[in-house]
Image (cartoon, rainbow, N blue to C red; front, side, top):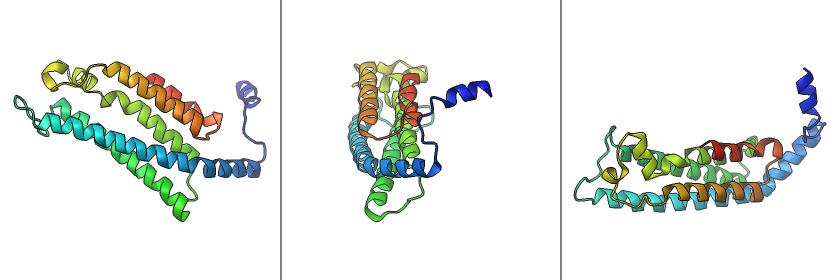
Length: 186
């Protein structure tokens, strides 16, 4: 009781439910276009990276890639495909809302936080180096190459995505803290 009252004084939301809903709807209109664009750009970048890595692993003469449950490359490509699917579905949903007005009952602020938070949390599993180590294998024996600087790339992508989210996507502070925390914890 007492802690809740103390925390409630720092609540930045409106006291009236109608004002809160109006403000949330205005934020939705401002945020849908940047959300759709960022999801589309993310999907394109992910597809380009996926195709590059997949083609180099399939054409590898010493150990060509084949889908197998004990191969870390299978896990890596499945995580990559799920990220592409997530961005594509989210971007499509944002576009459908913008163009046709569908899905008007969705909480787009929450959807944006979940999409960016999930992306930040799954990013380390999209690293060739880390996936091989998760499977207890030496990365140089699993991959054809291209994993130099994997840690730096993950950090830079996290910084870029969190900065993009905080600067360009209008989300209230009572919800936006999830994305930086997800990036920090991953």
